[in-house]
Length: 242
Image 1: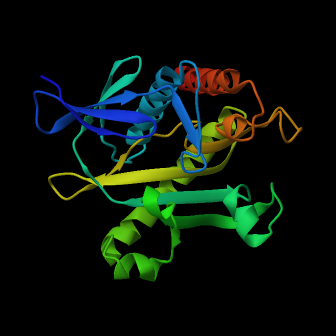
Image 2: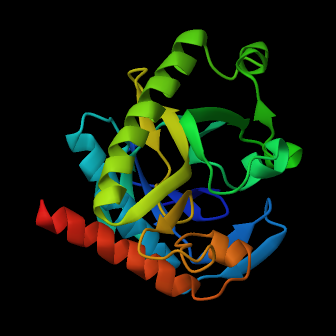
């Protein structure tokens, strides 16, 4: 018998008959600006679930440990139970979004190296950007865990940049979440999808037309579902060709 144990902005977690296995349901709900803007993206749950399942399986083949067990329905995944580390790890390859607002860097400027940032996963505080030392003072992670998070994030970034490039998509930046299993191992958790990545179509030069992610919802650019569908199709086509 399943029991709902957590509901976030984009997903619901349920228990299963196995205490070490959870069921993740992906919702069609869309939020932006710390949930100040709300809406619905038709079939988003199914698209993000399939994209995440496919990319997690592919990353597993590249040596990245994830919490994925299998996709059990169009909008559901069975995952290993983990304790989520309350840190959002953001990797940036190109200046966009808050990085431009906070630094004055022009949108679209390629960064000299992948920038790894840490945000406190706390809605009440607005998910603030934290320094490494603040993370340690707050005891959100140990020095060894932070080093592991950075190593995993950079490896995931390298793999995903290569993968999306083959899809004719530029990986601008993305957010990752990690969890710790019963054995103390750090696993990639949550999702990788147009909700959590900035993705630009390499076949489009126009700054608005190239957007293939949740920025279409944030900035009222329209054709949100079409963009998500295009990402889904290119990801699946690329995996099918391998």
